[in-house]
Length: 220
Image 1 (cartoon, rainbow, N blue to C red):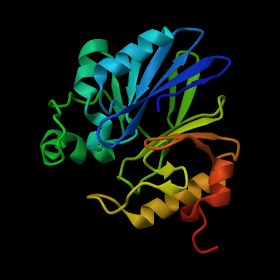
Image 2 (cartoon, one colour):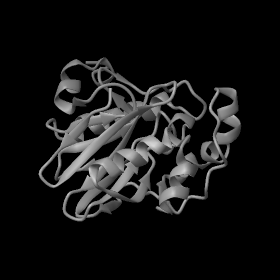
Image 3 (tube, rainbow, N blue to C red):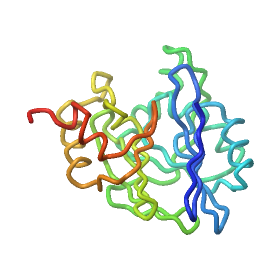
Image 4 (cartoon, rainbow, N blue to C red):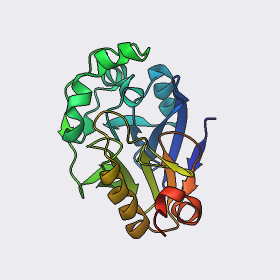
């Protein structure tokens, strides 16, 4: 189900796309009307229409990781907006083979454009007046990141943390050990009041996940 989240200086619109029901997001600054797409996972026209409906201009494309269900519309979005693409370089092997991987899973993925910028842990990105912290959280993939908008108390967690669950670690390049470290970082360092918008499923909060998510409480 598509849903919008409204804040004093920002709006986050969501769109569920593709056979894996991937959550893609448009986050925009109400002051400057500049916005970013977070994970161009499919339905390029729908994402562009969502941005237009919200009154935003796309100035950045931010990728939480490079799995095919998160990059399938990337070429289309890039062509339409000319916005720079940001992704962590540790996911480049998957990114560079996305077209071939897509054929195996029924995704028709056009060759992906070169990345414009490599993300780093701790980096600060600006979307209009909004600021996002980059958190490197490997495990689901080597270069998985979350975008944490501290002032909004919102984190877009990609496929690291879900409501009541976590991202798969049995896919190529996945790592259970890295995922455990990433989940521990979220549990210990992310404020409990943080709204979590993930790559699949409904929204949640860190407080709720600390209370109920078995993967955050292993060994306790």
